[in-house]
Picture (cartoon, rainbow, N blue to C red):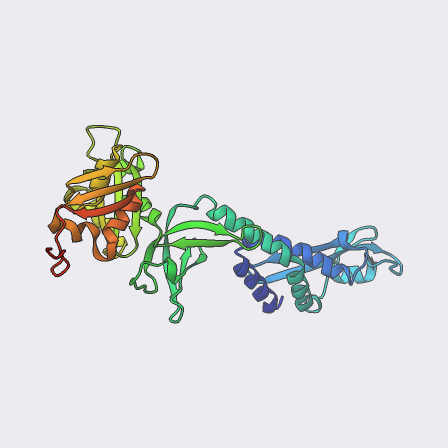
Length: 357
């Protein structure tokens, strides 16, 4: 069979991520329909054998041998039958080869059109099966291409191409072809048609999954991550807790000689990570969330407003607020409280003091 058919076959498979065996069966079915147009009412007598390895396929029409002039498509005269098989006899059958050149290109095109819808459905099911259990999980993928203009990075996971868009990348990071990176599967969009796997390196839960990989105590449930707040590329705060009083939750995450936390930091291209102990006491939790700043007092508002006022030493005010308010914002997200930070002593601004009467 000409190579054009198998090139079309290969293209169909790669475009739709369909296994060869499944694709061959679909093509066989489509070919039977295409050949039936030339041999009406003979579908049950047609045989199609496709061998992708040798890049050949054979098509036969099973014809009944008769001793007179054939009346139907599925009949053949004994004399002609014996040119195909010398052992042919009247009443028996022979495999009459169909002209592959005649049906090749037309059959390939017909097959492509006939199974296009089926392939889309198979591809959709394959992707959903492949990534259904990966949703909200961390996977390792290999960078295959970086688009210079848009910055979109194409990565490959288990032979499937995924797209890491610029807004889901860590600000300032650069990629190279062949680089292995970890990404977080945030979800699957357009499930009913052509599924789109959404991935991210800026999502806060990527940090959670990375710690699960590096810290056995988290993976085993001995240490629990209670809350995470993140400004991708800059800083992340992680609140951890353990029901076992003998377990140092923070120490477990940091690891011997900081090996565990450093592995996470390296994957995130140097992003700073603060690990703090979670507390059921809101005031204590808020004070710890503002680390590395020292906190003197936390007044939590009564009711369900989830607001508080924090007092810090004057020399700790800028540290508590952080660059562009980063530390305060991350602490607020981590705790779920609106935090108003004030210095211990209000310093009058020169020139704005009230005039003496």
